[in-house]
Length: 448
View 1 (tube, rainbow, N blue to C red):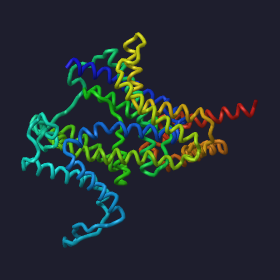
View 2 (view 1 turned 120 degrees about the vertical axis):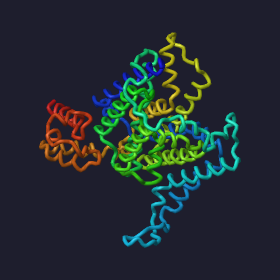
View 3 (view 1 turned 90 degrees about the vertical axis):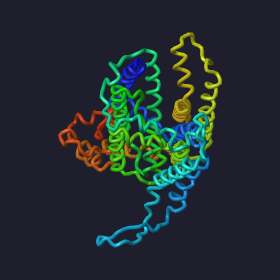
View 4 (view 1 turned 90 degrees about the horizontal axis):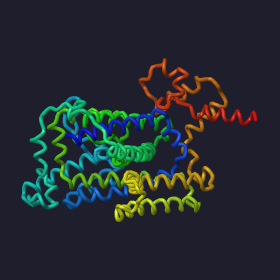
């Protein structure tokens, strides 16, 4: 309990920092310096280092894991352009077969279900070992059945359920570092998700809002004693790219389902009993697809330009090299301050931080045109808005522009939407601080 209390208090403070970084618009300013040359190696490094947990899960039973992978690939890719007959009923309740391509949308669900059923058959037949000391035991469907029996039917989490939150400076410093790392990962995930959905990249206000919500959720996580923050998972973006399901209504429904799982304990515990081998197969598909989506950003970059290929190659090499060095030399940095040593080693041990920061620095300091760097069309929406601000001073143009954006807030009252103050709030779609600042700077330049 004392450890949970320390985690809770430190996490709440780190979440508050996370929230402030989003609500003040600091992230939106950083986004202006991020392009595809930065995003591609950052996301690729994240996926490459996810190989370790994927192997941990799928190696419990390679046969079931690969069966899950093959079924998902077959349904979502090989049969992507085909319609298969599915049973259906008409309004008169007569049975017939209707051709549909819904197998692509439900490919991961179908593959997971089949893998789970096969695991149950192998468990019931005694094919899988019942020795808890062996790795294959985790591929059994009853390996974690005690979770279901131990979990109550209903459980209502509430703030302070493990005692009053406390804080420790060492824990807080580690959480702050992890918060900064999480923000870097989140920016790459936002951009890649937009790419997977074939939509325009999020504006700075959208990125600010996403980081803000993550921070608020992290504070709530600490308050109820979860012990970890809230952050996007890249594997979900891979699932979007594979199934082509990107409806916000779907994810809103998933959010409600997660809440239901959190309250009805038995249901949530049931899904925790999914065999490790099946989880490994799904992760392999999701993170493999994420690598492909991340790589698709290279379509905007001039790969015939040595500058770009050098940056990407050097970044990937250093991003894989530094975490390996940190693992081999846990005490390789010695500044005389243990806290500082821990922070530096944590930064160097994170591939996305090493790769992302290095790629961003090289991309913004080496000479290169916007077209060569892949920035033409990358921030196209913000460039259009800036041009409109130069041509017209009327706010009506800006209102019409934001109302049609997929990053708009549909339930925002018109009183707020039409106010001048809304243009200065970094988490609102009407936020135009960067545009106004740029316009003032241009006027000063002309005057001088």
